[in-house]
Length: 88
Image (cartoon, rainbow, N blue to C red; front, side):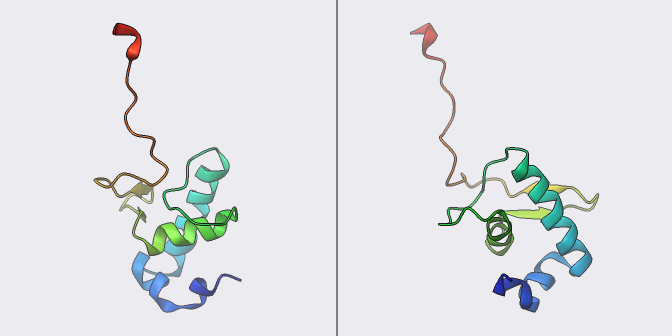
């Protein structure tokens, strides 16, 4: 089991166990569907990636129950903006 899930910090960060469970499940679905991780961790275990995203304040559950990404900071997996070089 992931040690961070044993601590109350992660539960309090998202607003309770139900919200934590919902956030984890929805983010796992997104990652399994091809979404890129928002953190740079040395593991391929998807659950650990999601927990780190929560602990590093990269994702949260909005008031409508949807997973949202914190904006303003480029993700470590971001390759930067796409540039159309065909016009050059």
